[in-house]
Image 1 (cartoon, rainbow, N blue to C red):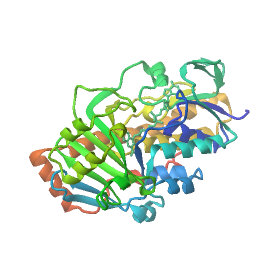
Image 2: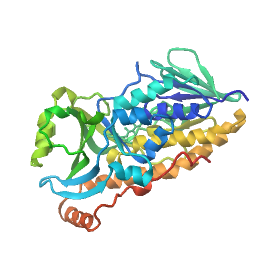
Image 3: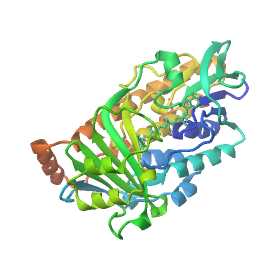
Amino acid sequence: MKCLRVVIAGGGIGGLSAALLLAAKGIEVHVLEQAAAFTEVGAGIQLSPNATRVLFSLGLEAALRRAAFTPVSGETRHARTGKVLAQFPLGEHMDARFGFPFLQVHRADLIEILAEAARAHSLIALETDSRLVGFEACENGVRVLRESSEALLADALIGADGVHSVVRAALFGAESPRFTGNIAWRAIIPAARLPAGLVRPKATVWWGPGRHFVHYYVRRGELVNCVCVVEKTGWEIESWSERGELKELKAEFAGWHEDIQTLIDSMQPGSLYKWALFDRPPMAAWGRGQVSLLGDACHPTLPFMAQGAAMAIEDGAVLSGCLRDVRAASEVAAALERYSALRRGRTAHIQRHSIRSGKLYHMRGLPARLRNLALRARPGKSPWDSIYSYNALLCQG
Ligand SMILES: Cc1cc2nc3c(=O)[nH]c(=O)nc-3n(C[C@H](O)[C@H](O)[C@H](O)COP(=O)(O)OP(=O)(O)OC[C@H]3O[C@@H](n4cnc5c(N)ncnc54)[C@H](O)[C@@H]3O)c2cc1C
């Protein structure tokens, strides 16, 4: 058989990582991105060792380390008193324990690193302003329908087109994702605007009743990323570009520790975004025939464990391993089935665990006090060891 040809719909973190991982296995990839450029919002992302392991295998270590910030530890603090409730080591401990670091990156930097590597790869074609509108099975493959140009023929189609996936809707019906009852505000603050020492070199989450506040450095420590999550109904717009009101955010976190007040006061109005959090229950199947899904298209995950993008990156590694040895178009469907069978359990676990984490963070009254006592009883233990140690590069069917 000639070189296997895969079309990926969606050039986000999942789609671009998968393109690089497939091309590294000698597979020809065509990425369709509906936006005018490969870009991401002004927000941060945490990359745990299970994700950096995969990205480093693509030769991206130097670029990522240059762009990132490496926190020394993670800590959980009490919303009002600021008391540290739990701590776990990150920094050198992650390298020593897992062989790969925990990095904090600006999303735009991550996408640029992935897109630049993809542009330089002879097996990858990148196409922006190109929206997938459908697909149809044809002899030995799939015909991919684009909005404003002719159809593309491929041996396989991967829908990496996010939570509102067109590919998913075509495969399984256009059922809307469910609103989780949580709203996230996101802002990036230049570190120079903040009092020295206010933000420590730690991934920090503050827990309070019905809400939590996360902050961490990105871009070598030049910027501080804030994510503020509040349980709230009645506003369900999911858009990376919906502006948030500082006044509203301030009211949501009234009574919280003075560090949180300073952080909110330091946000520039134009840099605050508001985002309703959606998810879907784990799916029993991800694809049919020569078509499958990847990333948020098949397992949108609440951000409370910072694992959504990590799961998308792992998906790409497993997918590339499953397609690596395919020698005939007739073998593609079985390889895609193997891929989703290998991934569904782990991603469903993370989806469920993320929902439970939100409940734990947002506890009130006596349950919150008991939670804090329990945390103190087992200090220093990372709750995510088993998640971080997963090696997607070995899990290849
Ligand atoms: C507040 C918040 C914080 C988070 N923090 C973390 C974190 O710290 N760590 C972590 O691992 N995860 C985190 N996540 C989760 C993470 O952002 C997502 O899981 C990840 O971005 C999913 O990537 P994706 O490529 O699957 O989808 P997306 O990022 O949604 O990309 C989909 C792409 O497909 C394109 N597209 C859509 N439809 C079409 C079409 N029809 N044709 C062509 N292109 C199309 C879109 O334009 C987009 O570029 C967070 C999420 C949120 C909301």
